[in-house]
Image (cartoon, rainbow, N blue to C red):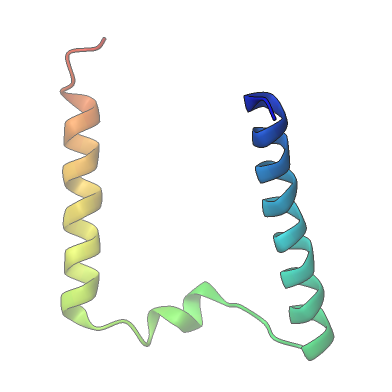
Length: 66
């Protein structure tokens, strides 16, 4: 099996997983709301995520590839 076939299979599997997940969520009436999920995030976790985003932005802004 060559590489292109393997990549197509992986992509199709990921898309299929997403379709099945959406179907199950709609069937069970599960709704995902980012604003509601924010209430359950601890302060330390929020600070950690914001620091990682800031560091990643700095790495990309100051990279020598440009």
